[in-house]
Image (cartoon, rainbow, N blue to C red):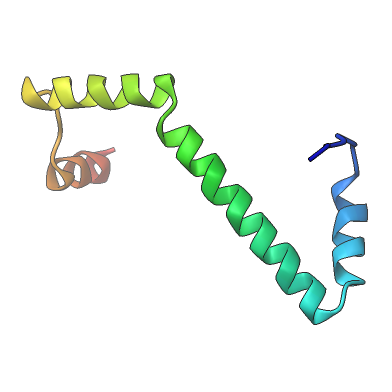
Length: 78
């Protein structure tokens, strides 16, 4: 499948979507849902996210965290 990348102002894109009939909008929604799912999968498995999760786990294991009630108490004092 060949792809072409173009730049379309969001307003024009929204207008074009509004001009579609219901079934065309549903098909577009399916395409977008599939694309979003793939993007989320890629994001979750990215090296940056994996590193951040590992860092957070390490901090938690070392006791470097704040409970929700501690956070709320601190925020109410500020």
